Image 1 (cartoon, rainbow, N blue to C red):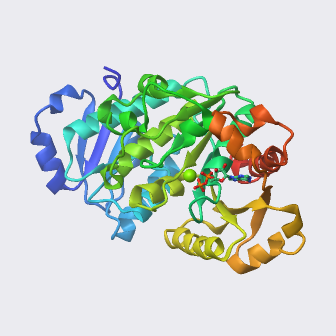
Image 2 (tube, rainbow, N blue to C red):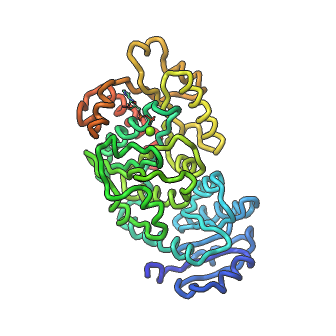
Image 3 (cartoon, rainbow, N blue to C red):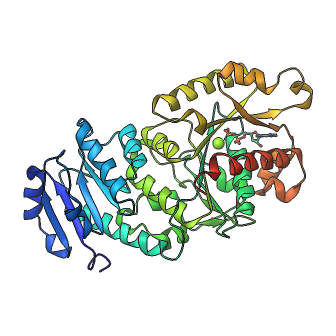
Length: 386
Ligand SMILES: Nc1ncnc2c1ncn2[C@@H]1O[C@H](COP(=O)(O)OP(=O)(O)O)[C@@H](O)[C@H]1O
Ligand SMILES: [Mg+2]
């Protein structure tokens, strides 16, 4: 077993350690060390020194308990830390991810969950040996209103980023629009599986399973398709989705996410995890009004202002002279990254044929504008950490 030689340290208060020590199946995890410590008691270097993986109780309502995590992270930057918490909100998970937490488990402890996370961590570390363990840059493409072109931009942007990945791992686009997803259709991709297979995989989620559900578009772009049958939005488990996303970020050079119309908790978690949220607007009152609301929503859950980038789609040359990007920026109270030309009927013609726009006309205005945006992102937000 992968975790056999590793030392797994579990730090929690007596009320959680007690039941865990009695749990069936505890013997299956060798090298397990249970340490009883109050939720905010300092953890000594001595204790951490020999650990390969640490599960630690975190009480979000207790400042000292939260601080304890950042303190360990600062002292042992390479040590995988898993937060054990009682119910997780989006903003809490975000804070923890910022602190460098690699995973989250729920309290009271479940030995199977501990085992699974330990195996995942070991597998990730194994996969990262010999290569950078840095997660690939990720872009969430969000729409202001339906039909404004988010999926069109997401697919072509992903295809462009695939051509720009120096590591040779290409890009993947995941269609999170569980009910009306059209990414695979737009790209003419048929795959053996869908996102639903990954979301329902639980413990079986691994690189092999991901590879088995991938569809392949042209030019190094891989696709995770939306489920074939409509899946209730509330059936998605945020943790599992974040695990899928994390694995994609390990396997590919770039990750692009396309979103459903409604911002449920899991969709927000995914958007929060990305380096950039590309918000697509068009020059209409309805679109700009919705965009303003979206920006407020993203800000309210703690997305950094710089992470939200506005793209104005379907700009007509003629219109562009009278309404420019500054007007959009002013209306939204947010800077605009760039614009994408209206290129009809080229874009829909390509999509109806199941082809990338660039496959049909690489030098089109649409493609050139998306390349420009892709380059700005690559040298801007997506370059961080490179
Ligand atoms: N820049 C553009 N030029 C021409 N047609 C476009 C452009 N952007 C989007 N479209 C078309 O608009 C329609 C809706 O686009 P889609 O990407 O599905 O929107 P959304 O994902 O925001 O709902 C599609 O038929 C697409 O071909
Ligand atoms: Mg769409």
